[in-house]
Image (tube, rainbow, N blue to C red; front, top):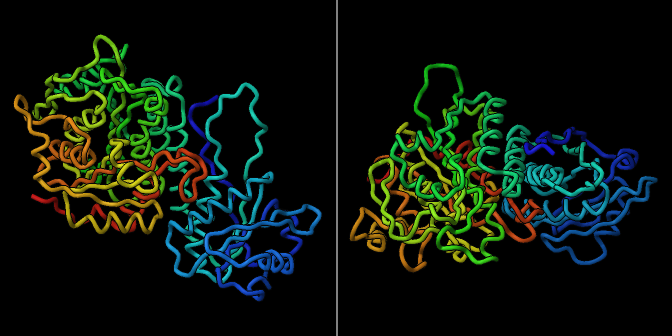
Length: 501
């Protein structure tokens, strides 16, 4: 099978009304109404009495879903969802996800989406996003694959539909992140990932440079190379991709997206136990988010220059692997005392941030499955964000509320640095204890962000959640692309920001 997914989305069309005959041509009809709905609410639907009987089964409850079958020859599956007034984006997406999961009980090649009397534009956005996620198939390596029957046509029944460009770009980005993150570690190794990134850059009209280990040695990237030296080959590296909205002379990027791409994390010399290591092929999801977001910005022809920097290696155990108490020097000259080899993500990000900073981006955003303490702080329902720019904090939270991919911010006070003081180097890699490690990791990373540059660290605690999250019904959620597009295109976080001194 191809290791690059098919990212084409189903055909989306609009009609102003769906009658009985139209419903009979579909596999499913999904309808969202207010939890205050009454029998008159269903008058415009196909077979309205069928919907009224479904509604009358029990008291409506916001967020709940119920289903029946229409009385046509096709036995069209009917799914009814209830939404409270002024529901949040997360609530809309969550309802949409439940409805698509319910609709997935039948063969789903065509469906209609209808919203009645409840802020239709935002709710249709959620339903479309859920449908585009449901239509995507994650990689499978079964010897006898299931027949390929997938959702190919979506009808939106409304006077107007949401702007589709960003909905589809965000969905494609999310699907790409989920696909790459789901690939087994023996399929997505460093040379394969490099080939996929190269092809994606070529197809999107981006420029790409690969900084292999020899190039990184010349750049003094000792923190990255400390992690990669345990690999059995010398194929690790950092991919640098550029998007420019015009062919004019190269300009400094308004945004640099930096992603942790640990293709498999054994923990290194401080070896992980079995359960902690089992899903460590997902430790590259930060790089997938950075890559997919840049591709989405290029697809949408964003009016600002943007770069992506992807730190790609494994963290292996072996005779050449780095060790606790090693002293290494990063590309910006900062010396690091290694404390724990399973804190490798901040090591590879250190050099990647420093190198990205040399191009003087207006805003740097890094993405990483970095700390277990962020999961303990927030669970997998939200991801964490930490910034050196207080003026961005409200935008970071608002982008989460607006997109439905929620984040919460954490402190960035300098006094935390006392926990990272070293007697033999400029900084320790981490503290001996895990208390507040998500904050200490951010304080460590900030040593590699150029002074005066605005920077946001996104700790992807939401990348893996049993049963999925919001509109995503797979355990691997692809969290991050939808959020960042809102942060940049709606909140415009890259404009007029100045980092704290």
